[in-house]
Image (cartoon, rainbow, N blue to C red; front, side):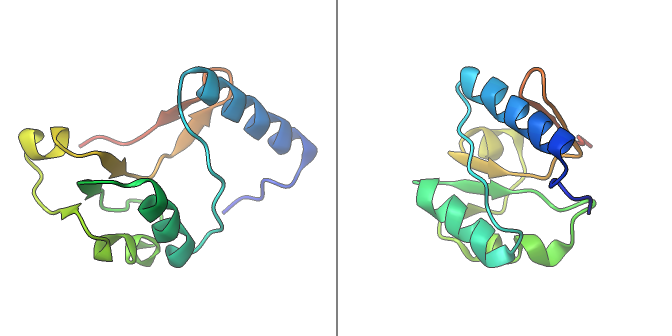
Length: 105
């Protein structure tokens, strides 16, 4: 995993966050751990939660998410459309627009 501590990366990260917020997204920086990720999702999730399989991240990073109440295990379009929160990994973020790039199979 690459570091985000360089000044250039910090600038891009701040630009990404500002663009995402201007598009009505919420942003929360979370420590890189299964426990922290699950706690962050639990704070905002009020209903049904869909958790994607990881592709590049270690599967155990999402392990605690799969223990949350409201977890939806079905993968039909109808079931996923009815979810209140979805968690997936992204392989890139676009600083200019605040967009994320995710793999879709």
